[in-house]
Amino acid sequence: MKITVFTSNQPRHISLINSLASISSQVFAIQECNTAFPGEVKDFFDNSDVMGNYFKHVRQAEEEVFGKISFLNNVNHLAIKSGDLNKVEKEILEPALNSDVYVVFGASYIKGWLIDFLVKNKALNIHMGVSPYYRGSSCNFWAAYDNHPELVGATIHLLSKGLDSGDMLYHALPKAQEVDPFVLGMKAVKVAHDSLVSRIKSKEIFTYESIKQDKSKEYRYTKNVDFNDEVAKNYLDNLLNPKQVYEALEKRDLSMLEKPFIG
Image 1 (cartoon, rainbow, N blue to C red):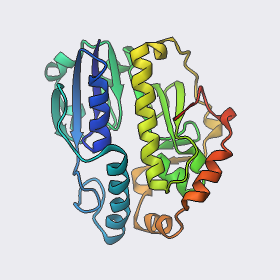
Image 2: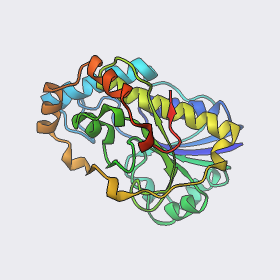
Image 3: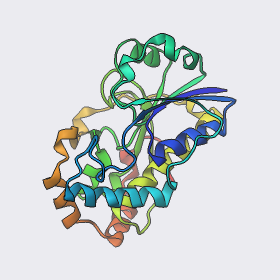
C-alpha cells in the first residue's frame, strides 16, 4: 500500500507520518513548515508574552504525548514553507500522485487542481475538532474555551473544497481522564492518528458510509484572527482543572457523535 500525506512539521505531524510509514510499503510526505517554537519565534503566531506563555503549555503537552521533533523513518519527503502548497507545480508532486490512500492533516487550505485531484481520490482529512459543532481553526481550543472539554476531539471526514465541510466518517475522542486541557488536546490528536492508522491498515475505513454535516448544529466557526492575546489570556486565567475535565468527559453524550472511537 502506498500513502501520500499532506501535513506540517511539529512532533504530532511527524508522528503521523511515521505511523503511516509503519503500515505501508511507501509513504510520500509533503510537509508545510512553520517554526518548531511557536510563541517563542514569531511566525504563524505572534511571540508576545501571552502567546509565549500559551504556547509553552502547548509545546510541553505535545512533547509529553509525541516527544520532540525528530527524523522521519523511511519516507519520501518534500518540505515547503506553509502556504506554498498551491504554488507547487503538478510535475513536482507527480511521484506522490499515484498512491492508494491520501491523508490531509494540518495542511494549509488546498485549492486548484490539487483539491480537485484529492476530492476525486477520496482523500481523508483529520479535522482537529468535533464537527459540525466546532469548525474552522483551533477548534479544540475553542471547545475548551467554551467549557466543552467533552467536545475536544477529531473528525475524520472526506476532504472537500469547503473548509472542514466534507462528509463525515467518524469521530475520535480521548477517554475520560484527569488531565489539563492542553494535554487533553494532544491526546485527542493521538487518538485520531491511532484510530485512522488502524482503520486504514484493516481497510475498515473504506467500508464506512459517509454522513453529511448538519451545519444547524454548529456552536462556533472560527478563523485564525479570532485567536489573539486577549482570548489566550482569558483562557489561561480560567483554565479548567483536571478534575473538571474528567467530570465533563464522563458525562459525554455519545449520541452527538458519528461512530465514536474513544481511546
